[in-house]
Image (cartoon, rainbow, N blue to C red; front, side):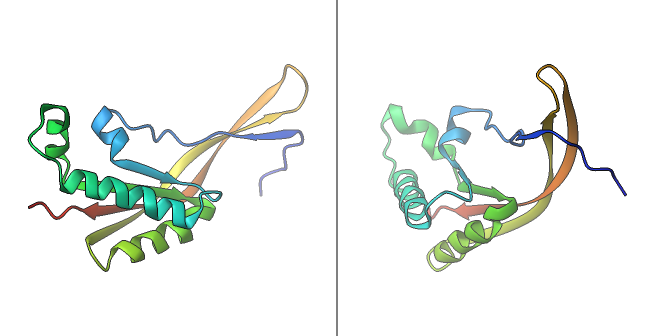
Length: 132
């Protein structure tokens, strides 16, 4: 059994930053504070934007996008899955579960910090676009 670390607990997010601009636009991170309805609206807006992209040079990068990714971990898994179920009526949705390693920081004194890694459950949804 591990011993409890005393001090202020500072949580750090997992390293889930999108790499390219297109990935950044097509990836949504759901947190426990994210309102369900606003997540649905944002994702719906992006889906319609990618589906109806024209041949304009500005949006040519959107033609490479074939799905939108929705990610959630920890407490937000239930909300992420309910978003996936909402879009499952109109789109094909793939669900991938996994584990993410996160880093916690414990500040014992003003200058002294202790870092500890822990594993958190995560879920990733891929909502596939219907290209015309």
